[in-house]
Length: 334
Image 1 (tube, rainbow, N blue to C red):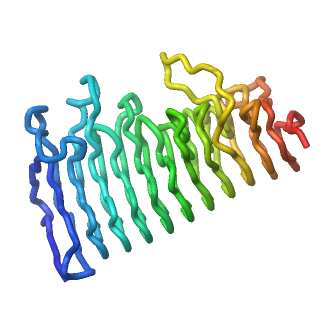
Image 2 (image 1 turned 90 degrees about the vertical axis):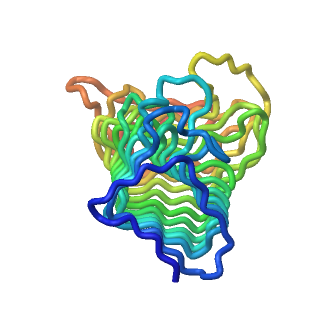
């Protein structure tokens, strides 16, 4: 066993650093009881890989835990031009465990999981101001068998985002908000091929989020997002509680119509209860050429956050069925 310990009551300033394996042991522990903080001046962020502050690569059996704090000091980046660094990246780290820590104010996304198999992520607290750009809580790509449980995420972007290569991912007990919800995507940017499947999001809360359960794809891509379930979701004044958007486009960009799209199928929204800040509580905007298939909504009870208003649903080429839903989703095609 190898142990790196940041002791309670101690504060360490770290420039961008990389920890690379493989290691001689398959039990590596990074215990943070104190604080790790990023540089407060942009020139001090230079290093071998300026895209990441703290990077772990090919370290199998890694545990990062404790009751401490990881502070990316991202405010100096949020108004700067150009690409901003990820705070904490795990690449090729199998049998990974993250637990207990508080992560705040990343320059960009707080935690990135890439090319990892078998990861357990529990009891994290991730915070950044609602106005901080692109400060996702946890981003997952090209990874499988990932468990995320019992965490609180409040940031300026997606609480959790699953992009291409995400497979067998289970998320439960996450309180999200503010932020942009829990997203599948975005997928298919610049005509790329994307694959996401076997995703379960259960027993989560969206509080004041810009989106709730979201699937977002660009026009022109290919591949699939399939067998995805959102279940037992509580909504508190959330915008876009249920949304499939196959016309995703960044603000200020012009995205022309294209025929190809990432295929979306086998999507279930079950047991949604709470209030919506937007009039469209259910929005299923699928590709006009390909469409979404096998969409199922059941036990949906979403009402307007503003007294006297009524929420509704809308669809574009969405095929499936619904049962016991407020609002009704009569726009679904067979």
